Image: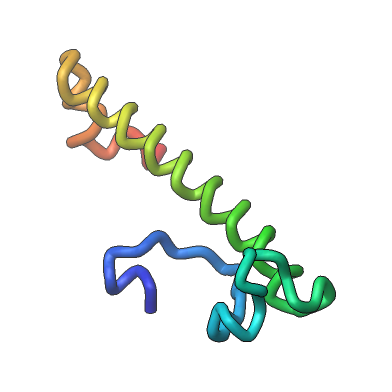
Length: 80
């Protein structure tokens, strides 16, 4: 699993074969209807969303920790 390796977990899947099977030397797709090229945008969109959400959460945690709101992080106040 990706999360066990320290990667961002996303639910979308994309089967990646060898690049030479999918792309020409100049980077254009050999077959524009290949399944991978249809799956990749959804996976990257979800990965980007997850990365932005985690970055925002890290910022919020930093603000709470460094500006006196540590009690919000250490108590069970969010469970209410």
